Amino acid sequence: MGVSENIKHFLSNEIPSNVKLIAVSKTKPVETILEACKSGHKMFGENKVQDLADKYNELPKDIEWHMIGHMQSNKVKYIAPFVSLIHGVDSFKLLKVINKEGLKNNRKIDCLLQFHIAKEETKFGLDLSEAVEFLSSEEFKNMNYVNICGVMGMATYTENEDTIRSEFRELVHIFNQLKNTYFSNSEFKEVSMGMSGDYKIAIEEGATMIRIGSLLFGARNYTK
Image (cartoon, rainbow, N blue to C red; front, side, top):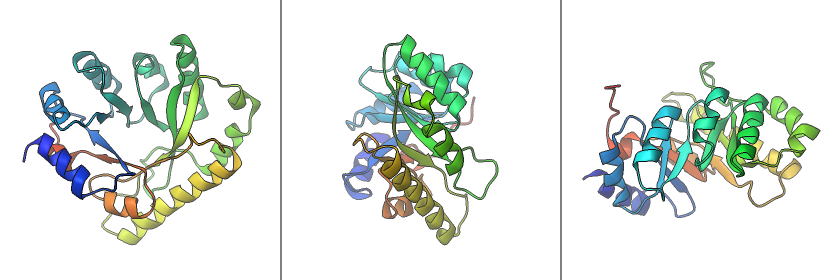
């Protein structure tokens, strides 16, 4: 099957209708993404700012672009005018920069707070106490150009399904705690977790967004 058929099959057979599919197009050329668009799917994720900006400029403007990688604060300005959702907000410093760029572009930028739920130290993310500290602050309450829509996390890269499941449960617990305490608004509703290797567990544990690359596009291209 081609990419377009893969996406149609995935949406029809692999995930429930209430779960959003972020097709991870990183390393894939524009032509492949255009082929993917023939399925009618419009949500794509990139993990590098430069690639995201380049593809935005080259591809149809009805695509909804998600920044799913680690975000450096000095690069926010390149995607602030158009990005649909920034998944990886892992510090208050970064959130402040996003708010500033939102003001410059006169748009409220949707974001997810990324939490460190994995055993691996190489993964990025907040811990709950850090998030609570800045969410309780006056400075956060006065931010008018960011919209916190939910949480994101990455499980440990392991064959142990019990570990993966417990980490996803931790993220859902954090989501519920934050929603009950800080975000009674209906816009705080997304739990972005699960990738090609663990998305089924993520859905079982309450994911509302999954980030899938290789199952849709095949192996990554490492030519860059």
